[in-house]
Length: 205
Image 1 (tube, rainbow, N blue to C red):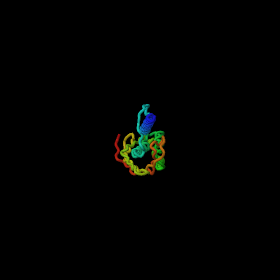
Image 2 (tube, helix red, strand yellow):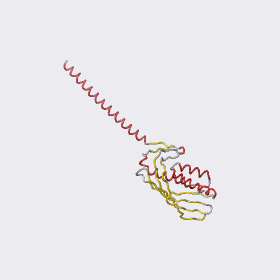
Image 3 (cartoon, rainbow, N blue to C red):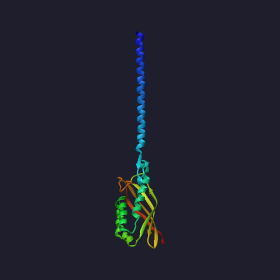
Image 4 (cartoon, one colour):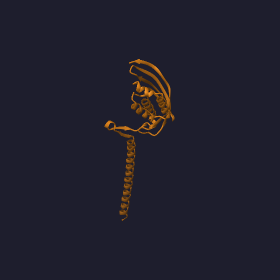
């Protein structure tokens, strides 16, 4: 009888040991599965799907701080392209300048109003003059906000009989604001000023 009880107790110990091992194995498997899920979920959150021109492509998200220099330079470049790309058409001039003024503060609006009062835009339309700009380089200091910048460009004044090249250098600073359809980079140009705007050469056409 004692031998039978001893066998039962041994069997019970084996069952208990097996149950504990089985339980620990399940806990380990669940923990590993959760870890893998979190890892995959984290990677998945860095993926975005884009739909340009009706074609689905995959991309990766990056932290704004890691790319702030490139975004700031593109913002400055976009503003100058819009502000200085003008054709002898009132509607086209208004559209470009309206878009440009969303990217800057009152310093850009003041420059626009001065040019308008001096008849600059009316002169472009009356003389069938086009204006283009070629951005040579944009320097931005992303170390601290507001981010100081300087833009080096060549301005082209195209008339029916000639083409004039002008050296253009501007400076200012960038403040971070909420991104929107009108301001996709989420920067605002402040204290914008023209440092250099001098003729380089004039060529006959």
